[in-house]
Image (cartoon, rainbow, N blue to C red; front, top):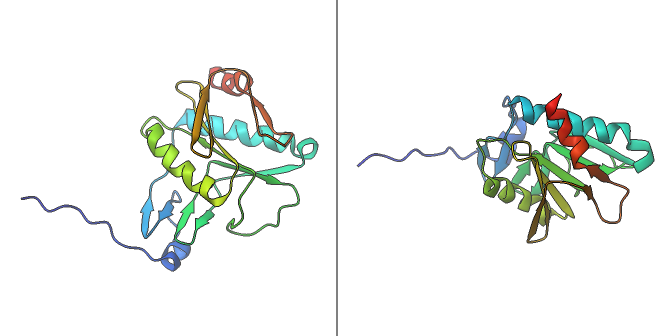
Length: 175
């Protein structure tokens, strides 16, 4: 009988002192890999950051990439893009729910895995999580337990000036 691999338990304090490269999510004592490293993923993430940065004043928002978000006392997730009000208080780690978290799906991770990560943001109080799939050129919007997908049109975050034209966003992958 083969022995099963064990995953070492890491305390919250150890995680916060660690400096893994690339940074990792922390889920109940276990450090987990995140999706990154491929060109289309990086290109789409950069485009998202640029869109939000270029519209920060007219939308009154701030966006950052790959910041640690403490979603629960023993869970830290690192979304690809976090959008928050412009007046947001800067802290090294986010402890309050952002307006929006955006994930860019990598081919090696399933949509189910991405949805599991997204659920942590929703539990924290983020109203919506957008998962963008560069391979399928599809956006998945999660609100509560509901997930919808769309391949065209505009994503809008209800009650805010935040919107994203999918054709324009995904066109960066053709350049």
